[in-house]
Picture 1 (cartoon, rainbow, N blue to C red):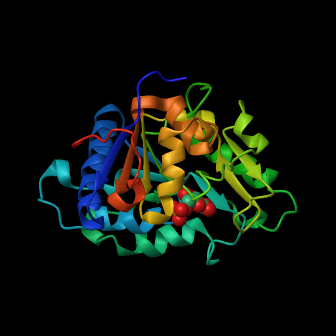
Picture 2 (picture 1 turned 45 degrees about the horizontal axis):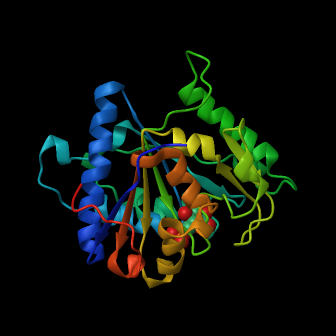
Length: 266
Ligand SMILES: O=C1O[C@H](COP(=O)(O)O)[C@@H](O)[C@H](O)[C@H]1O
């Protein structure tokens, strides 16, 4: 368990949130590129890709520090639904439509790591998860045998039930210790079959950020940040496992009534 607390930021509107998220993501990019040749991140589906696009497709100030170097990005999925890549419930399709297809040519193109479409109709998504884990191993463990991949950044959402990735409250998957990627066959949110990064992989990342906006999230954020009863929720487990490496980008309606102290600025 990590000792220090997560960083909770709250913004008056989506423009202000996106501006700060841009600074945060590009700091993570620049720091990663000072350590190795690529920026390796995992992104979620749901509401996250639209906010990320707003942050990254904004004009910026033209300085090298404020410029996304997309050609050095390797984008993985924090979770993915077992559906074809062009399906309306695919997180790949969402990211492509919201962000990747809109990146101006002069900023370069990221390498995207989708699931293996051949296995999306399998009865059991175990093979889909295994193949995605192999893709991660090629990227993170090519030279040495590593116990866990170290993403430079993982971008997460938090569902109104406290789930994150496809890690749902009360599911056995929360206790997974060995696999990097695991199948979920009974998601309470459709579609039921998915794959997900596991909790040890998420908490092992260098930087972890949640984006949660709107009044629909305030009850669950109160549980996650203020109440003992919320301490076993998947999003709360990320806070406990990664502490100060975790930053929450919220708007005021999402944290209305949350007592946990906010950080002033990045
Ligand atoms: O099903 C999913 O939901 C979560 C949360 O979505 P949000 O719309 O409430 O932000 C998302 O992070 C995850 O990737 C997705 O598969």
